[in-house]
Amino acid sequence: MSHMDEPPAGLPSPRLDTPHQLRRTVAGLRPSWQIYGIAVIATLSALLLRRALSLAGNESLLELLLLPVILSAYLGGLWPGLLATGLGALLASIFLLPPLNSPAVSSPGHIAEWAFLVIAGTLISVLSEGLHRAWQRSAASRRLHAVTLDSIGDAIISTDASFRIE
Image (cartoon, rainbow, N blue to C red; front, side, top):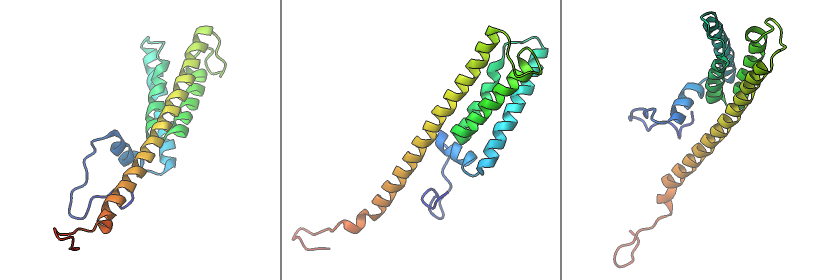
């Protein structure tokens, strides 16, 4: 966090009122390898949840693998989102879609479901990257405006009614 993002001395820290502030607090303080780790762990957790639910009779829940994509892309942008998408698609083809224990997918219905997972995960990742870039541009603009406003007094000369400089 730069000195422009920190509150002045003696003032409390700003509240986390916007998604950007929350994301910056959660992801901005973590190294990128931790965000990739979150992508892997969240994807594996979603796979385990999906397998547990399939034992209970719910067969068509491949969409659960989009949750780690959303989380990863929100925290890290394009590449963590694509990692979660690729890992989820690979694990789904091996462990969830017939024939099991093989990366091949046999039926057209399962191929369509798998393709939906890949396309939706990629789209989520790309859109999240666009959101990250917009946040970065907004932060840069806010910093520029803050510097401009902080130094604007240096360029203003005030005069009294007789046009004498005060």
